[in-house]
Image 1 (cartoon, rainbow, N blue to C red):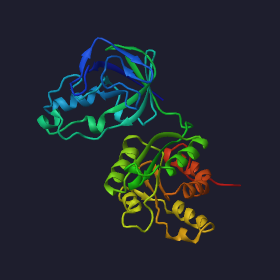
Image 2 (cartoon, one colour):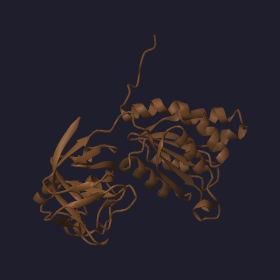
Image 3 (cartoon, rainbow, N blue to C red):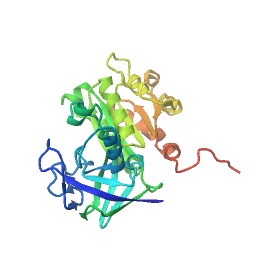
Length: 315
């Protein structure tokens, strides 16, 4: 299904920390962003977008903001951008954008929030990467296409290790998980190395599930009996639903390798449409545990993505 809208404004800022201002046209560069915009780069947030209708509603409530005030590059009328899932495709002339994130972490001291008590960018802002370049002018037509249901699954990998985060130990378990996922056809959207701090993990899990809309998040480490091992508790704290069979199967199969597997406390849960699975902390255990489950994850991830029916009948 194709949705249509119109570009109301193109905005850039020559320096970070300054408000974006409308320009006559934007020159979009592949894998970078908009020419002369200080926030362009090779990350996943190359271009920011906001629905014009949301800004109009904000102003009707007394917001009094002008184009670019929220830090958006493109102000688009007629498209409810925040409702588009990640991986949606936006087309405007020769420019092709892929949505990579919905919403952002809020800066509580932003000027708009201080003045009005609210800011819509953290919950309604959309970020995209440039797949094909060109020019966009105010008044240009923009279309939006839903993601291909057969696209590769998107995964993030988080390693929990105090020593690793301090640079005292090289992380080998995270790269092992990444290697296996890539070989299985997954797109890796982020890798993180965090200390064993539950609050940091909870924040990362929420961001990756809610804003980046990862299909799968794997964590490695923090699942044992040490007082600092709090990965399962942090994971359960952000869960919407439990999916215990995955963690139970990992423990069951791992018991065939070592009886100490019974001491593993990893969990498997669902947050929105993201599956989160705790793996042990060593490369060997990651390789074994992920090997037990990887072939069977595709159906569950497809159900969460709504690309297949959950139940079927066999003859």
